[in-house]
Length: 232
Image 1 (cartoon, one colour):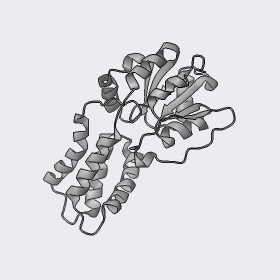
Image 2: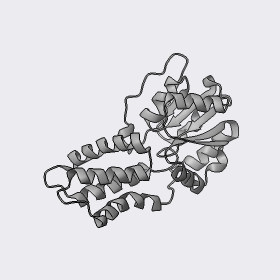
Image 3: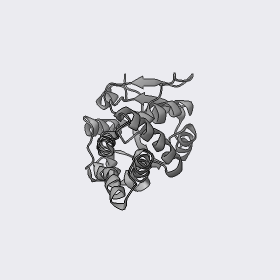
Image 4: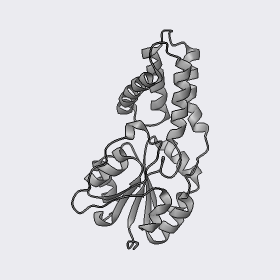
C-alpha cells in the first residue's frame, strides 16, 4: 500500500545517473599507464584508495581531488620522475570523465514523474558544486524536484541541517540512494527513513555494512529504482 505524501531526498550519482563506472575506467587506464613492475593491480588500487581518502579530507570530492590522488599515487609508486608531460597525461585520465554526457539509469525518468505526483522530491548529492550542478542541469530531471541540495559531505549533521532548512518531519522523510556510507547509515542516524537502491559499481570508499534502523525508523531495500513506486 503506497504511503501518504512523503518527503523523498534522492541521491544523484549512481542512483539517478551513472558516475562511478567512469572513474573505474579512468583508474584502469591509470594503472595500465603506470605499469608497475612490482605491485599488482590490486596493490596499486589499495595505494590509490589510501591517497584518495587523504585527498578527500583536504580537497573534498570531485575531479580536482581525484586528479590530485592520481598524481600523488604516481609520485609514490613510479620510478621515473613526474615531468610536466606525465602530469598532463595523468590529469587527462581524470578530466576525461567530465566529457561524458549524463547517462540516466534505467527507469529513472518515469519513476520520478510518478513519485512527483504525490510526494515532495529533493535531490541531495555531495561533491563539487560546479560539477554536480552541471550534471543536474544536463540530466533533464530537475523539473521533478522542488529543490537541489549539493553538500560537502553526507553525515548525520548534514541531514539534520537539510531537515531543518526544508522543515521536513522526520517520520515522513526518506533518503534514497545506493551508498550505505553516505545515503543510508547517516540518514538513519539522523532519525530519517531510508531506501537502499544497490548498484553493483558503487565506489569502494562508499562500502559499509548497512546499519539496522533505530527505533521509529524504516529501512527498505529495492532491486532497482523503478520499484520505488511500489512503496510510495
